[in-house]
Length: 400
Image 1 (tube, rainbow, N blue to C red):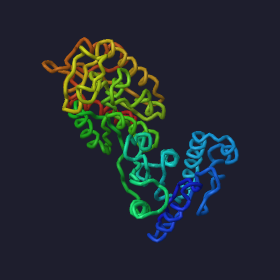
Image 2: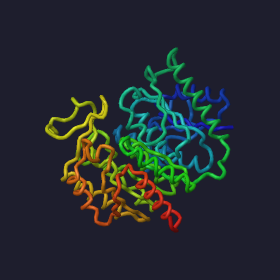
Image 3: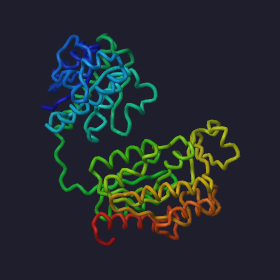
Image 4: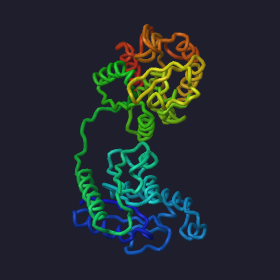
């Protein structure tokens, strides 16, 4: 029988969690109820007590109660719930996770599921799910459902929402528990792509598939880069083909698609073979033209579509980006290579096109002294295949 782990603050949501536990049981699921509240539970008794959760998070309930710091309590219980889930996962007792709550309960649940494997169902019913949900989802496959009404009793509306969530969790848990083990899976490689680097990535992907790999393509939109970095640490990847490092430009200049300063570090930190290129470093991303900050007035822009405005990076910015990329690659603990396409780094960076700026590109390339230089454009099929062959060589320890 599939097991659903319920994670929630039973001091304020005990009645709702008792209802969910009964509903999941009626749907044929085993249930493990984990209490993440710091005050005595109301309405139901947990299988994993708040005391145990707090200890797993490096604290204790009495200390959290006496401190009276809600933020610290949420943090501690989130860490503890994550540790409990890790234990249960190691015992083979997690097929899905379900949580319901407001901002605090949602934050605890989001931290609790953050380290779980991709593919294991994670569902949160939240009052916060109608706005910016990035703090709750992060870079993982978390499913969020808006609660419509507050999680305060089981009423005519909440019964429908919570009932759907229970049915979804039970169904996903059953599917996850009964999924047959894959046989003969090909090694996984992650690749980064943007619309303006698609031809190059497609060529690399096709070559890698010829060589026997399965390729996961991540869209370099900030969240895509964070997801790639997160997956690298999972141990699932044989290598990374990071052709599109454009998110670093947004991080440097202040665009809207930054993946943060840690982009392009996970593979190096974990020793995963990686081949890197300065794909789309020629651009910074903004929303509609009227949303571009005033400080960038006078810069070169290109309206990619009505909702995306691109700004050309300057020679000084390109030089700094070149230094950052080179430093990240040089710091890798495993095999790593940097390939430079001398004829342009994006679909807009070629003779006659809006972002063609050989001086700016040269500034970036000069800051990459150890890079291999190819007299190709980033979207030339030969460039993508060269990156794929180099990565294959690294992974196999042989020749491409």
